[in-house]
Image (cartoon, rainbow, N blue to C red; front, side, top):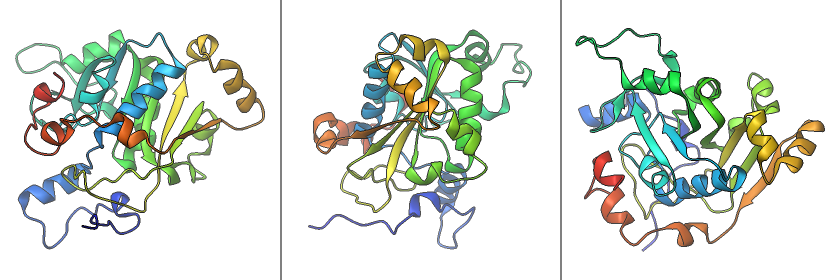
Length: 257
């Protein structure tokens, strides 16, 4: 049976309201919730580990139901947050900069603790319209670097040129990374291309096995380009991914076990 096909660019087109939306779909659309295929999250973790073998702690600030945080927790110590309470995650707006006061019970928001104490990396699949803001905020809190999963077209912007000029690595997927609104469908296909975009702090570049290559590319106005090869989906897909991430287990606590 042929896999269902998303229209080109559908992942980026999430208008505030569609006439046929029920209340749940409307909420998912407002949140721009397009869950990451677990294998693509693992590919991002693999990339970060190769760039920064000493990476230990990660903040996933657009965690949704754990489709990214769960796979990353197989390799790193992960803290997960989101603007919406999906169940078990810290609830906070990452792009707000953590100026919000203490909670009503006087306790400090756990996200503020993370913000002030720092983590090695911020790794996430952010809402596309806010991706640039996520990168800027991530570079304020991450000691080592920031990695975001975005459409390949993310680099095609005059306004984002200064940010892209600072980028260390772009790793495009040779295979497609299908995403749909509200849930992960392992049998979906798409025409949209995705890549991991990575920014690294100077200290991380200095100790990276790829540091010399990154510096050489940046010296001539570019960034190190890598390809995530064909076969990565099969290699990084686990036998229980369908059970854990495609509907039977949806809580972030279970996903991160």
